[in-house]
Image 1 (cartoon, rainbow, N blue to C red):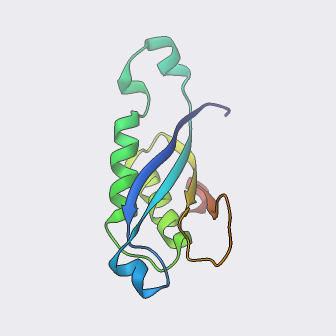
Image 2: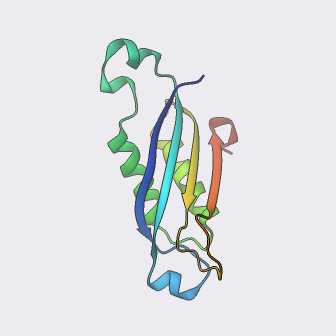
Length: 124
């Protein structure tokens, strides 16, 4: 399947991180989501019911990312992937990238983060 629905640059404020101040002050993260979905029916029917709505993706991802504090962004990304796969049965695979632009690193950098890819076969 080569069809995707995506949301790029979703800004969410959360409290993930290993450092104490990350738990109290938090920071804005950016999420990119790519959902593998068969869009053949939607492309013919022109009906929202045959796809995954962007607003639904944003709601599910934001809630999953912000509800619980994680020390690692890897765990936060995993929570988002699991929530997307649980909520949207038509999604075969999801790619979640978490950008942490204010990571506490003593260096100048453009971006740091993680990308995980999870599919239905990966759920255990």
